[in-house]
Length: 151
Image 1 (cartoon, one colour):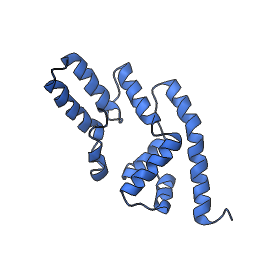
Image 2 (cartoon, rainbow, N blue to C red):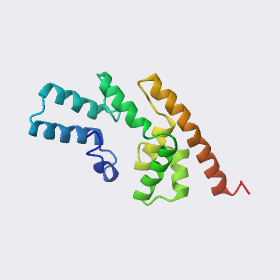
Image 3 (cartoon, one colour):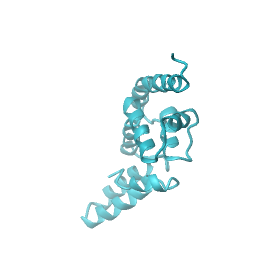
């Protein structure tokens, strides 16, 4: 349920899908008469999984870290290019997003997450560090090929 509102982010870059997803989850959980205390905890974890606020529970920190680990390594590179395709960005523009990541664009935000991840658990941080070695190597090679300095 944490990404159920993600569709809003592509067209509304300033809108946090964590907030939208938490609101949608709250309505759904209420409609199925889910325990109110548990629903509040679930909605908090969903709300803060995107850095909206600090997570107040172990479960919220784990959801955050698991979600951000899903944006690292080879999968992270693939996701960046999927987002580039969804916004009609070229390979060269994607490399530029990598060189200058920014919260101001859908693709640039993903590049920022790849380069400056924040994890609450040591295990997630260590795994991300290992996975992201391929990311830096990939973009270094991509820039060489774009500039034709590899020939």
